[in-house]
Image (tube, rainbow, N blue to C red; front, side):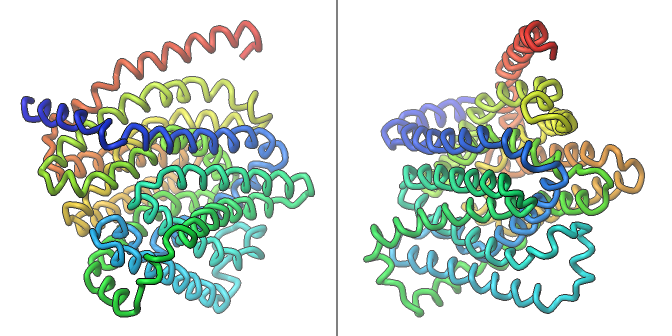
Length: 462
């Protein structure tokens, strides 16, 4: 305990001096603005597009998510690590070129595969638009690489601005095409606008501000980067694929094998539950990876990780409890008739997203301490667990397949959090203690939800 407290005091002593609070505030501020734009547009989109349209968009988004997560062969994750700027620039260019190459291979594969393969998705409305998949993978992978370049330079204002551009472009695209009657194409194109706007925003900034660094890039430097960071494609790529597949492959199964638009309901529920992750988790995760290599070299990674998890738990417990209690009662009112099922699923998924919000921001610790192989095994195990839960439910009790997906997500991220914590040097009791400190905040969120429902029952008869 003394070691932990001393580390925590040391962490807070440099917290303000190193601008961490300001960095988080900038990222959260930009993300709040971006998510507000999306949240305001969502009740319009749910009235322009049906749950079945959202199921088609969910299938497309899942495919893009799986392939773009590993499109850079994870060289993007190495961009913040080198001390030498030229080496980092080599990694940036390597990441973008790799994403483009992966997209080309994917496009050729799509062109050569017989139509019968695509019919397995059971989404006829999507089959004609699969040629857009390589486009999404290219710009999605490019955005990940550019974002890590900005993380390296602690240029968090640029990342925040790009998120506002993403949300605005996606909302305008979806609503415009929805009003014109293009369903589900409007949802698909809106996703591409999201990826494209972010990549264009960050890409232009890099070309303007970092021309000197980019001019230093050479084929020899890129080849040396491939050799030096070969563990990332060898191990981390499979980790990223397994992680993305564990999230998106069950969604593809649900979209293909259920008679109801469960994937559409899940898409809306996930959007709402991702708010705490988008507002806080992503920002903290980017700050964490920008500071963690130095903490590791100083022998303070365990304390840094412990304090980070504690704050994440306290920040997220209340909002997620609020969402879990309110969503089954208000989704139909907010998003329109037919969306009540999504509210029920949001309540089931809240524990999963709580654990995810604690684990994901600090998960890069596995790469920092050189445990890429452990990260890969962990993600593959998570993929097997979640696919097994969904497949078993589809065979035995199809009506609770989404609930099974939610429970498997909670189990996986709970295990993930403990593995990451132990890898940094935290004791198991410290991990449990970090989670337990969020209980008062969860109770407060529950009380607030109860009060809001009491008021709503008098005004709206909810």
